[in-house]
Image (tube, rainbow, N blue to C red; front, top):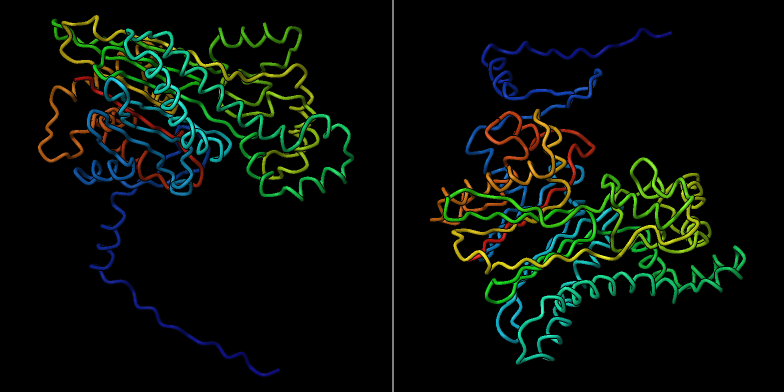
Amino acid sequence: MPPMVYGVVAIPAATSSENLQALEEVKDFCTTDLGRGGHERWTYHILPEPTLSVELQTMSNARSRRYVDSVTFQPCAAYASLNQDRYSIEDWDLPGGSWTFTAIFDGHCGHDTVNYVQRRLPSMIRMSLQALLQSTPNSPLNPELVSKVLTSSIRHLDDSIRSDLLSLLPPEQLENMNDAQLDQHVLHHYPEWCDVSAKCTQGSTVLVALTDPHNRNLWVANLGDSQAVLGTRRGSGKWSAVMINSTHNGNNPSERRRIMRDHPGEQNCVSDNRVIGYLAPTRAVGDTWLKLPAIYTRRAFARHSPEWLSPGMIQQYASRILTPPYVSDVPEVHHHSLNSTASRQEVFLILCSDGLPDLYDGIDMQLDDQQMADRWVQVVGKSLNSRVDKDGGASANLALSLLRDAIGGDDVELVSRNVTLEMEDKWMDDVTILIQRFQ
């Protein structure tokens, strides 16, 4: 056996200056267990100011448009392109003047339904509102009729998803097909099936705000667990917060009671504060499989939506679908008269997805819903009082100031951790905030 020949590579020892440079490069890196315990740690980078503020502004896509400031934030690098929140800010030139429409759509289980809602709902509401205004040109505005426009538009949009499925696969046809015939039918309509089935197995919450040309009336329509809060400062100079809507999820006792009342004797209609043990929002657009007989889940979605859920989970949830629908598409609409507060100095509206209140669950203090709303209004009010808007910079964006408070405020290390954490999974929910000022 021939002797082994080894190649030797000489690696010179690092110089003292190189060691110092290496230490300098990592001196601002830290690790955290995120309060989970155990041995696993994740790395984050402490950023100095003003770098930290600039990075947050960029990552949150902070924007200001006339009287509306916005941010939408998901810092996880692996999911940077997968933020499922969407929002809309539009001015509509309608009979009588310009109306302002703002909305947040919080998608779940995918992007197809929330994209569909963002694309379709604003134009549907605008066309219906225009028809209403044209039909009563010389009559005082009836707030109840505008509320009906919002309700009917949201429900009509949801019904369009259901109608597309039923047109593609009618229930009587599904019942009479064997598996091979169903497979062939889906294959024959495959592009259409992919589009329809995605919207049926995904969903989106809806939070809409609408104001008339003179900012005398505000309507808020809610379907899901996003939140609207009105901040008002009167002559005393103190800010007060009014929570406009309730949240539609399994943590709301009235929503749990409503579902159990609609499905008497069904123990699993709400389980672990989730609809049939699966879905947190109790009202949403989409989630059509929870609004139709279980045969669609067992036979159609289970066989032909492979990336949705595992077969075992699908069968478990399908067994609980006895008397659909379980998820409602009926929004709550609230009308608020703004001109009744003639002595007000400032009024603003906060719209946010459920990711914002979730962030406050991680701070030391425990806040109930009203206390949280009070805090938001105080933070925004303080920023509004002191804002400097000479160059349209970060200091001018009220939504950004609220996001900064939620992820750590003046605690540079905590904010840095939330912005730079190196982790493959999301460590926070998507957060979208719109703040509308009334002038």
